[in-house]
Length: 177
Image 1 (cartoon, one colour):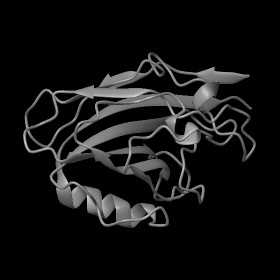
Image 2 (spheres, helix red, strand yellow):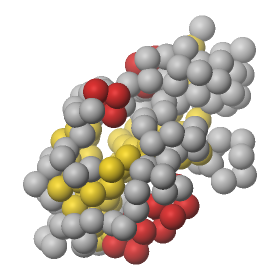
Image 3 (tube, rainbow, N blue to C red):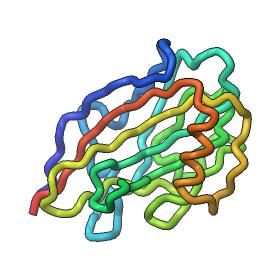
Image 4 (tube, rainbow, N blue to C red):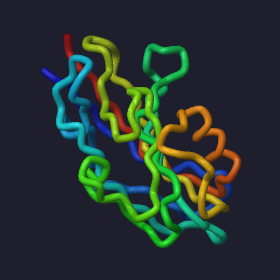
């Protein structure tokens, strides 16, 4: 049986502002819809709906990441990286990764699952519940010079070189023994 824990929503920013990230799909908790479908997990592997508001002045594009700092790797686990989202975009629909419904020009890059697509939660069975950080970044450039084959370290570096402000939803997910 899967154990789902309450989701805490928080906004973090580099500059004081009202930039906010919300989701209609992960209110209160992650579900089996956002669970991976491999590595012993049997979820639907659907990227959640995300929407944001009050982007800071000077925003020229957005990036989205999903990161698990609790993965037993020593460096966490990157579940999703999307860059070059046009500045006019304010939302991503449910299952946009698998359905090919990302905004025109957006690029999904390599995750730690080894693919350029959303990879859902899949903490080791019986491990403590893991934290999942869903973050949207407002960037000061229209495009990052990366491709679908770029790895998470390079993409993270490029995002951090151009971030104006960011907003995060913190969620938890665990699996019983």
